[in-house]
Image 1 (cartoon, rainbow, N blue to C red):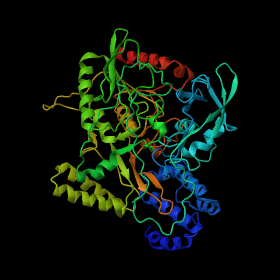
Image 2: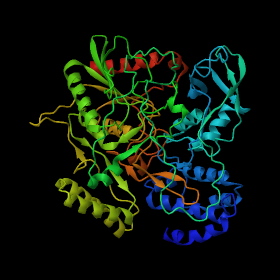
Image 3: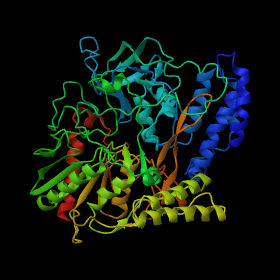
Length: 606
């Protein structure tokens, strides 16, 4: 990539009088993005061999760029190039905070695009009498099915399989974020929405777009590339929501779980020593935080990931334990199923403000469950991921046996050689534990070995400890503190990244029965880079592949060596049950709750 850095400034001199990027600037800009993925993208071979996309085949994209009419057209090509990887963690991101929202949400239930939530403060029933569960026929003359196909390239944060791609694309029908979709601002002031009511009537509404932020319409004259990240647009993390929100709930929601509804407690993040930064980079992956916009601050604003509250109502007889305090990191409790007492705990995220605080709270709850329950239901539906090592720590509190810990394979690059070498020196200087120094030494040796053997990737390497095997949680005397009774683990299409690592470990060690839907398939850790100089875009890049304990055949995914990973295929449940039905939407998941309660009761009887 050095040649681009040397020659690109010369290309910019001709553009000073133009409002749009020049053809030469676009080409150089795109090749910079390609080079970023070429050197860093971990699952390249998997995407090439299984999904049929070779990121090195740039000619078709250069041809499109040569024909692009303006900067937005060019941005759209960059977005679709990265989207062709079909990787949950990888997106091209525009430097824009523009958003247009209709204050309702769409999702797919029983194969149809239905209204999943409505903000009645913005859309009063007297003027907009449609309901949750009504079908979206079209928007501005385009059929809902066609909109989904058009929006799939902009479906981020969970696009690892076809089902989650379509669900996220459905969500983009009423929520246009230019951060993800270059053409988001190319809309009028109102949307014409055709809705089929549940009684069969077809009705048409004109709904005003609620627009916020500043739309980007062109890059503008750029005399030379940016030489640093100074002044670049930086997305801000979404602040914790003041109220517990979930799909299918309007402002009149009665809070059936009895959870805390005020601001979340301010909890400081755990400090990370400088010598642990590379290890932390390798373990982190999760859903992307979008720019803060009106959608995130309204009463009915919903993010499909990391909600503290389950998507369903509590089981009959549920007694809440965690969730009623501002500092609670989980929702938990117990409920009866026949003569059995069942524990329930929701893990909303693998990236809590403080992993130590959350882990201690989790362990205390597991100790209670060990003494007071006959079986346990663990909910990671809609868990957008975070730290793979935090996920492994949670598994250690649930599995009384040694299990396969988190391992990864990375692209062998000189950057990793320099990184690991410097981290060894830093760890030695700062008095790190010997196992950490040994771990970095093993990383460095494996990358160098991969270089010497002309391999593109390393072999499997442990992430969270000195060995691949992970021990159960014990007290100071070596006694196991892990839960020993049956576990049912709830998953869906929005179980993502580190939440999939958690699910993988539980399934591979045969510690839990997985119930629900196939997880997303977002494997690997992810880092965001400043990707392009002229267009000032950024990109998220998957650095590695996560290894399973053994190859697992997944329905709909071709058998072969890539079954050793969950990337692109997800974790397939032992008991398949799709939550996305009209019945569950309208009845707050009663059927789903009844079915998983019957499943855990059956496990307890065994």
